[in-house]
Image (cartoon, rainbow, N blue to C red):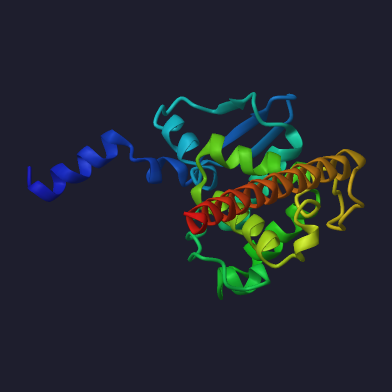
Length: 217
């Protein structure tokens, strides 16, 4: 048998994952028992799922730590990207819009993450799922969105922009507990400023007293 023929036989016997996924569908099951059918090739955008699919008998993968709402968004990304994760963005973040940050050819990804980030809690759940599933491009995209929101928001909005209570992208009034916490922090800073001032005044008084004694001699 020639070397080329032997290689083809070995590839067929090993059943490489790319070959396996061409016409195979699997079912992803969320923690709340919602099921999503998807091409194994598309699902392999997740390194965790890709590893699981090395077992040729795998037809269903249970993801008990991921809710149906979150898994639905993950599947949407998988299908849109057709099994090819987005390349990680370049850092630091330089632009105000995600469309500019991700570059040409990734406009869908920018729109997708912008829409997900409007509902903060669901967005954070999505980010946690990218870690669980090991989808590095989507994870990087989400972290980039957070960096973008923080970098280009007004200083007085830093405490509000990541508020998990936001559901439509619009900032909410500061919650009372945050206001109280800010007051405590400011009071503590003021106390420390006064202590430093008194310490400096005491030091100056001691120095003047020492100078007078020196002059008296």
